[in-house]
Length: 279
Image 1 (cartoon, rainbow, N blue to C red):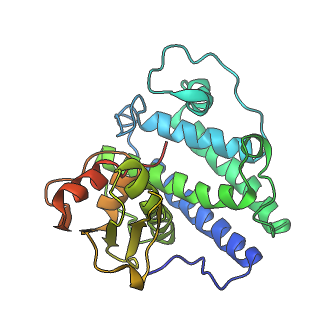
Image 2: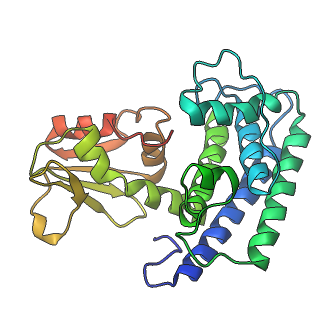
């Protein structure tokens, strides 16, 4: 299976497809939140400092910003998990909604995303290089980057809630495939920069349901996507979609036996330990 956003599509078609994937992710996430019990909202997730309520509040915050609503400029206080400017910024949205009821959070997500979706349908984006709206454009994001990131963020947070509450599901949807495909693109960076693989290393990543990807470390020490002329892999990593996104999302280490490593085991273990690329 591949992402619905194909390389042969026009810019407008790719952006339209991303909007559809985001909209599907939002619908699935809010439907899940409707089934969270009153006593489950305080359950800790894999994200340090964030329980289920905080994950929902974070999503409500970002979607409200995209709908044109103002940022919540509040004091964060002691929050060791909120690192850097972006971490403090997102934490403000969580803190501002700390006393909001679950119904209020779900309603805010739905109202904000409906407003944004209506706007995107009425005036579809056509230029992926155009600045993203509001705060996202202010930090240098383009429209294309924003529309790629939103379904990833929403779907990953749905999975955070599902793991916290032991409610597995929605692992074979368009948002799931989009998220894994997107995260697989980081392999050259992970291999060369994070894992410090030696020059000439060829690392192959096989995720069930996706086309395998390969990363090669060039003479300059930089990673690049591999091709058929790069020779046999130094190491091959094979796993399922859920295990991969948990690793690439920096959520938790893989369960024993969750990744099959063939070839240079030491390099494979370094790559796995370096896989987390989301903030």
